[in-house]
Structures are given as C-alpha cells and as structure tokens.
Amino acid sequence: MHLFSMFLKFQHHLYCLCLPQIRVKPDHTGVVTDGVKHSMNPFCEIAVEEAVKLKEKKLVKEVVAVSCGPQQVQETIRTALAMGADRGIHVEVSGKDYETLGPLQVSKILAALAKKEQADLIILGKQVADFRDSGTFASEVNIEADKLKVVREVDGGLETIKIKLPAVVTADLRLNTPRYATLPNIMKAKKKKIANVKPADLGVDVSSRLEVLKVDEPPQRQAGVKVETVNDLVGKLKEAGTI
Amino acid sequence: SKSQVIVQFNWRDALDLEGQLTEEEIMIRDSFRTYCQEKLMPRILMANRNEHFHREILNEMGELGVLGPTIQGYGCAGTSYVAYGLIAREVERVDSGYRSVMSVQSSLVMHPINAYGTEAQKQKYLPKLARGEILGCFGLTEPNHGSDPGGMETKAKYNPSSRTYTVSGAKTWITNSPYADICVVWAKCEDGRGRGFILERGMNGLSTPKIEGKFSLRASENLLPHVSGLAGPFGCLNNARYGIAWGALGAAEFCFHAARQYTLDRIQFGVPLARNQLIQKKMADMLTEITIGLQSCLQLGRLIDQKKYTPEMISMLKRNSCGKALDIARQARDMLGGNGIADEYHIIRHVLNLEAVNTYEGTHDIHALILGRAITGLQSFTVGK
Image (cartoon, rainbow over all chains, first blue to last red; front, side, top):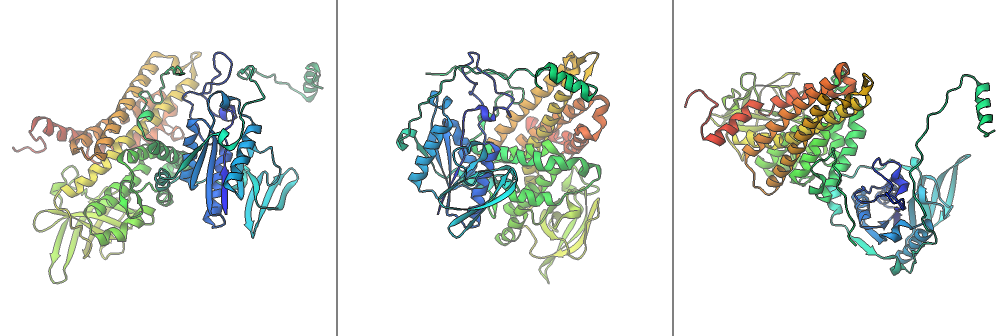
C-alpha cells in the first residue's frame, strides 16, 4: 500500500507569525521572502512522523513527502526524508504564481497527484484541512484490515470513526511527538530521490482568481486600561460600544 | 529577472558561516540544536546545582547517532569533522560538562579503539559505545603527571606464562570514570613505551572512586596493539581538542547572546544598559572573536576532512577558542552584575566550566609551547637542551 504523507507550503504568512525576521515589502505588495528560512510547520512535522510510524509498524509500504512551492521547499522535503520518508515530490510553483497560490489550487494539485500516484492514505497538517471533513483533527490513527480507524478531537470530546481507504487524515497536535532526525538518517536522505513536477504536468491551472491589493503589518498593539471593579469594566465596554 | 538582494549585517552570523556549510551539515546542526535546546537545556540548571549526572543522556545522544560520528561503520554515522564540530558547538552551548561526556566517549574512547584496536575489539565495543549503551573513560593523567604524560608511572608488566599484562597504577581527573563501563588506560611497558589497554568494570583490582581511578589488574586481549608511545594518547587528545575548539565557542555564543538580551532588557538611569558605550564595546569584542574563531574552526574541519592537517593547527585553535571563550564568559558575567552570579542566568556556570576547559586537554600555556617549538624549531618544555 502506498502512503502519501503530504505537507504544504502556503502563503508565507502562515508561519510568519513565528519568525521575527518577516517584514512587509516596502511597496506593500507582499512580504519579503529573500533569505527567509523555510522550515516545516509543526503540524506537517506531526503528519510526517505519523506516516513514518505507520511504516515502522509495517502497516504501509512507502511514504512519499510532497510540497508545493519554490526551490527552497526542497529543504523541507529533505527534512521529511531525514525523518524517514522514502522519496519526495516537489511541485514547483514560484514567483507570482506562488504568491497567489490558494487552497483551491493546492487541493487540485494534491488530488491530481494522489490519483497519479494511487495513494491509499493522505496525511496533512491540520492547518490546511478545510476541503475534506473525514479524519480531521486526528489524535490517533490505526489501520485495521482495509479500513482506517481514526480518533478525532471534536468539541464534545473524542470521536472514533472507521473510514474506507483511500482516505485523507489531518494531524492535530496530540497525534504524536515528532522525532529528531538522526545523523545516519540525515546522511541517508541525501541519496533519496525528489521528483520535480509542474502543476501543468498534472493538468492543474494555478492562476488565481484572487488579486492581492495590499499587505500591511498588523497594527501596533496599544496599551490597555486597567479597571478596579466589575462595574467599571461594564462601564468601559458600554462606552466602547461593544455591549 | 535578477532580484536585488540587499545584504544586512547579521550579528548572529557576521561572516555567513551558514553559507559555507553543506545542506547536510545544516540539517545535522539544526536537528541536534533542537534536541539540545529542548531536552538538555531544561535539565542543566538542577543537574549542575545538585551535581547529578544524567546517564541517560548518553543513550539519547546514541539514538541521535552523534557519538563517534566520524567513524565509518560499527553503527556510527561516518560524517565529516565539520559536522562533529557543529555538534560539539551545540551541546556546549548548553554545557561544557555535557560536551565533555560526549568528547570523551567519541574522541577518547571510541577513536582509540577504532584507530588502534583489533577487529574483534572494534566489533565488541564500538556499536555499544555508539548507542550509549556503555560509557567509557580515558585514563592518561596521573596525580604526578599532568602536562608531562611521558613521565607516567602506571606500569604494564607482561606475564609470558599466561600471556597477559598486569597493569598497575593510579590515574586522576578522569571524566566519566565513576560511571564508566570501560576505561582506555595508558601504561608504560617494560620497553619504556606507553601502550593503551581497555579495562572493564568488574575486573579484579579496578576501582573508580570519585576523584581517583586506581587499579591493579590483569588484562589479556585488552591491549590496543596498533600504537605505542605517546602518539597513541596524543592522537586521541587531538581528536578531542578539535571538538573543544568548536565547543568552547558555542559556550561563548550563549554568554554573548545572553548578555546582549540582558543588557537590552535591564534599565538603569532610565535607559537600557545596552545604550552604554562600555557595554557595546564589550559586545563588539565578543562578536569579533566568536566570528573569527568559528571561521578558523571551519577551515580546520575542512582540512581534517581532506587529511591535510597537523597537530599544531589543532593546538592553535584549541588554545584560541578556550582562551577567548573564557574571557567572553567572564565579561558577560560582569555585564549581568549581581544577577551574573546566580546560576539561573547560566553564565556563571559557563565561567566555571570554561576554567576547566581552558586547562584540560593541554593547558593554554602548553599549547603555546607546542606552537613555539613549531615556530622556532627550539623546544621549551624542559630545562635541558
């Protein structure tokens, strides 16, 4: 069985909040991307870890790591290979196309790729998961016969479902603790293959229906006001028109 | 079209060391740095305060494959010396004690077995040492012989009837010895030449109390046959000294970054301490020495990987990195004022550790003599000619 472990690079600002060096371009058309380090986001790390664990349990045969984006995303694919993925696929999207790449185009790319590769299972980081609602927010994943048993974290608690393969699963924080890539595995990763693919090869048009008009930094956080009593608080909220 | 890249000065990496590393070296450094910051840093405050040795750290490092990393085969990663240096720097950024444990295991125990041992010895010990399953120590220094190991009094007497050696003597200041499962001990044979022996805990007559390691025991297949004389221990020490050259700068970097943050946060006379000229001058000196030091370590690592190095190069950088790091740590301690004495700020721990690091594996002065001899052709170790 082929297992597809996928992690996606979206617009930079999804991780921007964690990186102190991200700056808005002077002309307000986007964020500065030169010299910014591309690292795998934590949910994608968890997705890769789960895939590798399933392979170690001998429940899946092959783990493929996928990323969409410019040349630099190869670093994150290599990290996945160092964690234990068998091979990588880099869907090359760069320049203006990358800046306007949205969930719709990415899901088309992944769907086309999944079909081509005949993937049985797709695992994603939860942040990119809005297009399927099976197996989302997974905190536990098990393969029983030809079905996938998933424990999901929902508002009311935990929900256990069984889904047929092929399926999509999104990883939540409590699914596992990603391993540190070991030295021997980092060195083996050098020899693993990363295939290069263009969206056009998959029959996907990445031109965007959205146009970015302006990008601004979030406003500077203003100091708050301290109040002494609950009545003062209610008074202030009424003044501000919020209640 | 060519995008215009504006280069900004980066005080964290002033001469772009990053750009000189391979992708593999960066990945190794990043993965191990994360482990050190997430798993070692939280433990060190109490471990240092209570003098507790976390034996499990060897197993954790073993799992990551960072023990004996330059050795080919036997369960080792077989990576470059530059990667070894980067590893040492990351672990010493947390603590010199942790890095000492790693250096001893890798350079002073695994290296001699790999370089001078028989195939049987390598198969028996190296994989377990690599996994951190067993811990080793290096017995060279004696109570009366530190800087002059050639004068060692530990003896190895050959017994022809049983074809064994009897090793007797006392070693001191042996890192890891109370917890070690094996000891690589250097002793003088009857021909006057020193040789290395692998001794195992449990052997009759071997005791490793907290400061001194005393022994008198029989060892048969434990001789390391492929080296004699001082070349053996010095080969090991040079291997370790190289790691220390990188490691000391990791400790210095921690102190520099910590002092920078502290002086930016601490307000006195209405302004941050970092606003003051004396404070900035001190940080300018720290930045310069660390940056230049790392460049020299990188070049040395590349030369070692190309097999184009000499021991004097290693002496030069061990001496430079340790001396400069100790200085930086002391300055940083001073910049933190009273808080600099509290172990919660970590700097004082680096100051104390670096005193030891500056001293062991060849003192600052001894390395100067090694270089002096290389520069002039005249030895100044002994009083005579």
